[in-house]
Length: 191
Ligand SMILES: C[S@@+](CC[C@H](N)C(=O)[O-])C[C@H]1O[C@@H](n2cnc3c(N)ncnc32)[C@H](O)[C@@H]1O
Image (cartoon, rainbow, N blue to C red; front, top):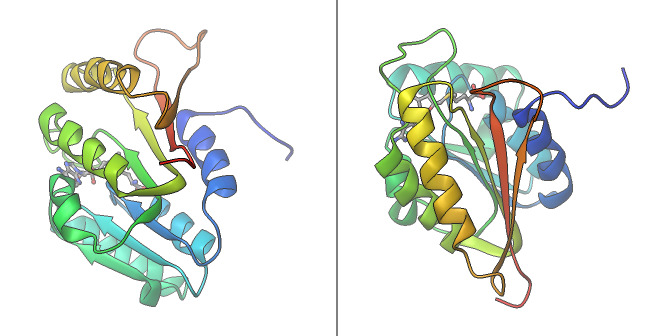
């Protein structure tokens, strides 16, 4: 299969393949079942490291199993805490911080990311970036809290200094209302 312009997550991964080097440091702010954590662990390779957050204990159990099955568990730190604690919990600068908002597919829809903690986490993530590092955010405005998050993100990202960051919003224009969107923010080299 060739290149497919497929989904917000797909767009985020395209960016991460370019921006996250072998030996790099990455953060998965929303671990879920660990698919993004595994992707990041494979990208950074043996000499890199990934920090992954989730507030659900089940997420850590399924992610640990997935990482062990793929032989990459030793390069990942799993954190059972909110990404709102990102600044205190991650001890080093990062090349990439990844957010995949909303709830766990197949999980409890009441346990979803929330506008206030997402905002705090995104601001911390931007501070954590190395020059040329990226934050990617997949946002799902198809439900009430998701709409609030999208509005907050548009405000937050639009207000970033263009001397410090490049900021991109990608949306599928013909996918109908509530379609996922992808934000990419890169810290400029000069900062
Ligand atoms: C859409 S899922 C993530 C999917 C995941 N990246 C994957 O590859 O399977 C969103 C996840 O965010 C988690 N979450 C919700 N609020 C959170 C918070 N404050 N801090 C960290 N994770 C949170 C949920 O528990 C859920 O597992």
